[in-house]
Image 1 (cartoon, rainbow, N blue to C red):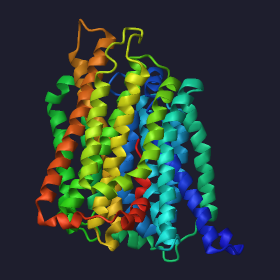
Image 2 (image 1 turned 90 degrees about the vertical axis):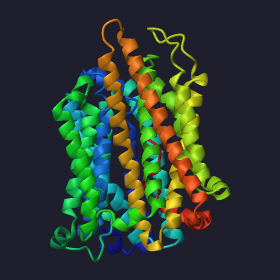
Image 3 (image 1 turned 180 degrees about the vertical axis):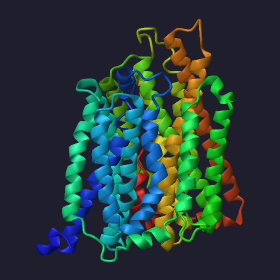
Image 4 (image 1 turned 135 degrees about the vertical axis):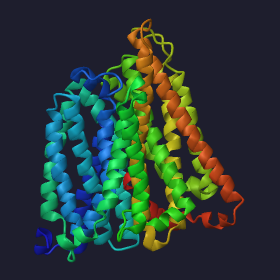
Length: 512
């Protein structure tokens, strides 16, 4: 029962108001995720962050989001999706306030992690609320399409807002503005979002919750990302580093064993027996990870090598954001004509070309950032080609997974590919940071600061190229296997019948 229902509002009007609240929250989640990409050099200078550690500004948010999305989805099932959703908004409000006042990197990273925690509570439960209040078919599909559009717009807006705020009034105002907006949305949610009639009790939630799976998942993800992103140079040879990394991989590996025996596992084990779902989950993680690395490195190179201001960097990122947003709506037509695997291969091929082109485009810059290639011959073609490939892989892989799933499995498959996409970001950024740190440490005397940075960025750029090339090889091998396998009949696609389900689950499909 809500104020709207007490005033005699129809269910359809209540659903429309609820969708507006959920869409605004989704917009804020993705804006927060991408807003600091361009502000990173400015933040690093102000907080005196050592080169190679800036990545934690992004990693902390992405890590918390990816690690807690599945657990918070399960908590919503047990304790009420509306309740967990509102708790997420409360966490985001508090975390934004303290992020705005952060004096050091550890403090900022901590509260950025809390922001990601709040987003992890809102995202899966927003989808669950929509599934509950909108009837199956066209109304529900349209609602999920709007939710997906909100996330895509938020990602694009975050790059621009973060760059403009950082260059004009300061990066802290991103959080000062977000905090009261999150608070307002939380109040509106308390007043207007309808509660389910059959919310389960806390006792049942505790009884059914997969605690062992959650712990192994969190410990494994956290340790692996921490070691990769924080270890420098010769520290890789230290026993402590190897022990922590070993514990991380062991914990992450034990997660899959624990899930086989859990009463209500975070990820049903039967999904791992479907090679279409497994391979495409990996491809989704790789394409999201590659996109996160590319945007992060592009921001660093434009500001550290070309010495552009944050708002100038935001303007150079604008074509990539616009093209990526509008192009995503045409991918379904491409898949309809070419099937699943070919667009995935083409998408990774574009990402390889875009990242390789960007690698060699800025080497002419002198100490003052002059004599480099122009925007139209360097940043523009490389970023646009790269972003053309990303949604092609993401959406095609999503449709492939839905095509082999039964209708009753759509929700859990959607949670799986959304989680896979969020995992790719922090893991890829951690790997990128580790490689760049090694190069920075090894380039000692005889190298200027700018030469060390450029060598580090080149190593990072090569990492992106190899990462995307690995995705291309995996996609190609999978296509060959499917082509010569009896199971190829499962990949015949009717995009029109699956398009609604793709839009329904597209809340996490926007590019960073």
